[in-house]
Length: 187
Image (cartoon, rainbow, N blue to C red; front, side, top):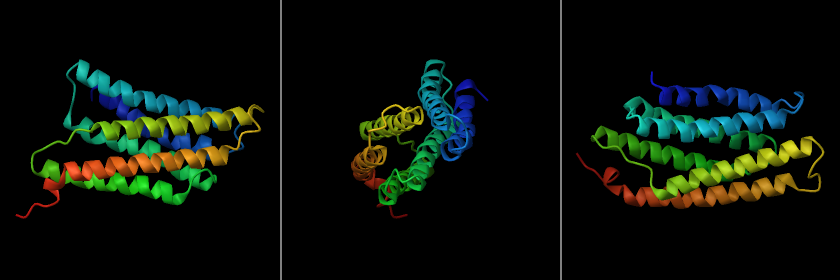
């Protein structure tokens, strides 16, 4: 297994540790630990792609595993945010629904011998997701240390989650329109 794929697998392995740090509040500095784990996992996403392209190590395994690892990381954070009262379940369902739709279209495309690259809206969606999630985790960590106590983190988080849901819906709509040929095929 090459280094980019190892980084992708590492991102997946970090997910349960992130969830545990986020949800087990008895751990000292749990939100700071969750923030560090999520940030490190997010950085592996950027690093694995750069390494794969730079060293010509792009693999079919990596093309499929990388988006799966991303979805595991982001949706685990959002689902935890629901449990913590930091996100509407509807906003998270919009994100998860878009991911299922995109994955289904990609599977059909692969069945026809095509790989669909992420478009700019997908990249914007990912960046906004990471910024909002890291921002919320940072606010939680700061409050854990007695800083920024006056901030309404649930309100800020919910607004951020709805921004994510809106951008995700736009991204999904664009993806759907751009790839209608995979939906409207009759064989």
